[in-house]
Length: 425
Image (cartoon, rainbow, N blue to C red; front, side):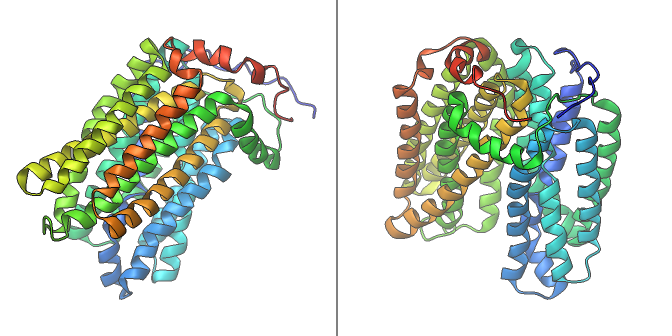
């Protein structure tokens, strides 16, 4: 297909030093839209006079919309200029949030909530965009900064929704989020540099390429396998721990689960450091350190069976360690895949994140069944098995022997893929 010559793309230094902080804030604010509905489902049930199961469906549909948006919309970052794509998605998200906040009944609310999840995938477009606007020496650090904003948004979303909803009603979080998202669209519209991807691939081919890359890119497969295993263990722990601490061993209420969730804030502060470690030591070595943290987490969580103060401290330590393993591993994995060809960054991230969410869903399903059939001890055993599988993956591959920067090992490893024709245009 014929095309006019596009304007010159920004140089790898176009991101500067301040813009990553703005983009990190944007990641946190937008991802929170997919998570704060989890905290207000009881308020929605009472406010709209519907059952708890109907209200819970709101959070489920928002999450499903988010997963669908990752697969269906994020690949467009390789096809369309990212700045207008980001601002358009933010505008759609703001309108959907406003519609949810003004919804007269459960049906319109569920529809608006699904649209919120579908459109609020901006972080997964900003991450590959940022990776392409910096030099390889800064890539890990910048990804870590954006990942810290992403983690902070997830952690604070439930507190934002719960506190605001408790004082002003369930509609307030939606309306406030609509205003914040609209303001963010204006800020990013002015702050983001202009990028013109040199890709003419049609939309169906973009989706097909996402699946093809999972088959052809070794670095992507390694990143996916590691994150699926560790993220699955993370989801197993957090799904089962609520049942465990509110059960007969501890007899606590759900507020205790919220306090334990704040423990994960430690991973937010470590994400930028993980990026610097990736820049210095390479993604493979950081992944192996994260695997060690995951195995240590399994041991600490196993000690949670003791009960009492010692047991709850062990649970907190184990949850912090598994959070660190997931978040720092995420930085390393995305640095690895973003060291590949820049014209396919969005499709690489789409394949990676879609598989990560599938792994998390599988982990939740397995974690609940391990707990209900065998007791708490089976959950950390499951985590240890999942993380050990990731270590074995690295042991049989070539990645574990590479400790150079993010680009060096991947360049050699993917030489055969790079020689293949680019995706159809």
